[in-house]
Length: 252
Image (cartoon, rainbow, N blue to C red; front, top):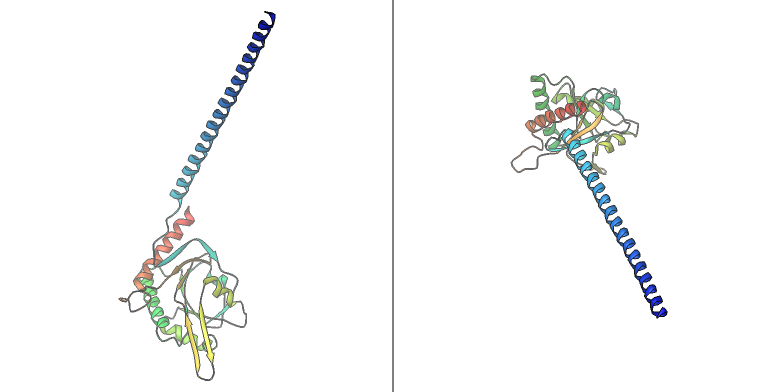
């Protein structure tokens, strides 16, 4: 009889131990659930905070204008360069500060693209003058063929389009490559004496802001209905949009 009672007591103790272990297991499971829910809540709050912050940032940012080309959200500085203008005066990065600069490039013996682009820029310059918006704007033509385009030839060439246009060419300093590479000017000159001298180049206009940084790149209009790669109305309107974007950006 005592053995039976003792056995029952042991079974009771085992049941009580099992109940305690079960309670502890339930407590751990409940604690884990609470910790998981707290973690989910924290992550949700962080996500909401990031989303609100992004919306606020986007609301404050000035939208990029839609142009024939693209505007740089973060304008890039040009590497140090030293060129000569059509009067023989040095032209460096400092020559860009305080003015808007529209840069075209090509070579003087170019039969089509270069002169038609400069004619379009001449009309743009005239429109800016008529509206009194030309005081802080300069137009630059960079020759990629300085071997044949001497200072005198360059001076006569740019003056044909506008007396205020600036012609640029490389000098003895090899850092003209910095100028070309910073803008992304692409060209190829093939020489096979005595008769072969072929020049090919890309087509683009580069807009430099008054901080001497590349602000935008204008691309040509590729259309069978356009006789010229650049239309002066497009350039004029795009340029005004770029200036407006820049003015709003520095006010933020």
